[in-house]
Amino acid sequence: MKFNTLFTLTTFIGHLAAIPTYHNSDFSHVGISSLPYDKQIISACTEPNTVGLAFDDGPHIYTDQLLDLLHQYGAKATFFVNGVNYGHQIDSYKSVLQREVKDGHQIASHTWDHKWELDKASNETIMWEMTTLDDKLDDLIGLRPTYMRPPNLATSERMLDVLKDYHVITTNLNTDDSGGNLDWSKSCFDDGLEEGGSLILAHDTKDIAIDLATYMLDMLKEKNITGVTVGDCLGDPKENWYRKAGDDFRDSFLLQNKENPYEKYIKTGL
Ligand SMILES: [Zn+2]
Image 1: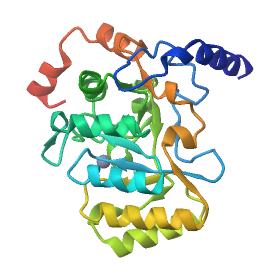
Image 2: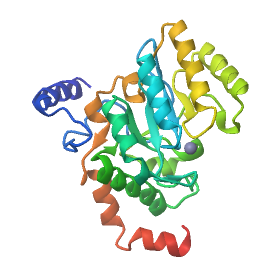
Image 3: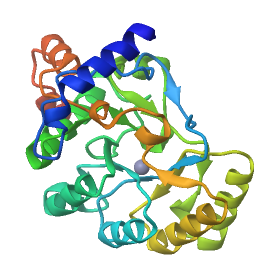
């Protein structure tokens, strides 16, 4: 732990001249985060008086407006994005992704197409889902996330083993906004916050997204709680949120899979 901290500090100082931005993907020191990678699920924040604002399934038509709102409240968020979902293609949202990074938000993975509950997918499919999105994000904004949230929060021991190089995030403050019922989601948020919940699950793909986010931000302000990214609420420095291409996950993936997993996926659906 001490070694890690020292190493983090030393490396951080060494990289001060090159603080990462969305056009700089040199995260050569990734992997020294003190956060758990291996077979653990993170469901709560650790920094006092913070809440991790986290929105899944986008980018979508509401995301830009959500960014305006977050700016207005001085809050930050993590966006667990998909490559394809709700009929959108992430390529059309390059400027939204760039804005998310420039505004100080965090981009994380929610798999390429949200098609699989990963506990039911083969190891190859899990890797394909992750690396396909990583490659696309690398193309679009030069960043490969180290944080992921599994679709429908489905996890298993085997899946965690495959995802050993990612921080696997769930939630302890689920707004249950999938049904699009604003009053219900507000009460879920209130109850969750009251019970000490700190790591939010909401979606920027729902037509209640802006109203619900406004409500959450008002409530947090009232209680003097700061809405931040998941990385920030875990005390993990920004330079640990992304990795460079060629890091362990991708290398081990390519070594283990001589057959092109995409071809296999298309052929067999597995
Ligand atoms: Zn989702």
